[in-house]
Amino acid sequence: MDLNQARFNMIEQQIRPWEVLDPQVLALLSTVRREDFVPMAHKALAFVDMEIPLGAAPNQVMLAPRVQARLLQDLAVQKTDKVLDIGTGSGYMAALLGHQGASVLSLEIDAKLVTQAQTNLQKAGVSNVTVRQADGSQGAPVDGPFDVILLSGSVAEVPATLLQQLSVGGRLATIVGEEPMMRATLITRTGTNSWTTTEPWDCNTARLSGFAEPSRFKF
Image 1: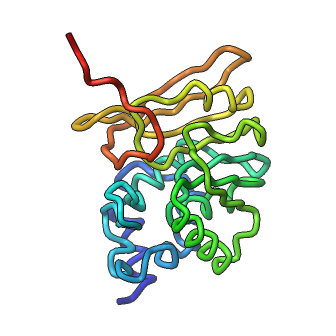
Image 2: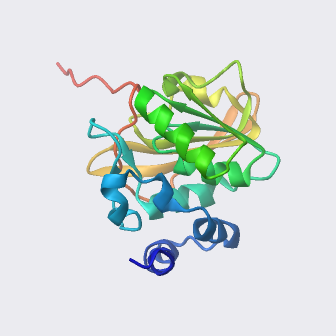
């Protein structure tokens, strides 16, 4: 496989058609080697438009390339931004965020994935990302506030505790809802007790571990 051609095809055939046109994001996707963050057993799938399995649990996946790219574009990460990444997985999204922001704290609930991500990031030469085993649903209040918070997966709703960890002007992005209809959700903190929310696109993705689900019980 010609990896550079496969990467080019991914960007031109999957990512650009999904309205990801930010030149900085496209440049990052060209230079950060996605294939280095994919498990050996699935290397051939590195540039395919799908979620790639990372572990034993069905929700332990690497999000599809177009979804990662669109989330990254929506967050508009700046060089001075302090970033919280929830759901490290293989570390690929943390690497992209590390190239854009000042520092990244990445939380992963699964110990094996923490080790894998740390190894992947070290090999990729990304030195401003710290990976920590933790329940991401609680965020990292001691380390905040954060200018950017990314939830790399879907949740039923965004916990209020995470919104409180945003700095004023800070942005949080994730996928919210239940199948068959989930929405990308971008929340911006506009003041001490005020936030604005937009839902710019539809996307179904795997659930993040540790986040509460709504009660199914009804009278």
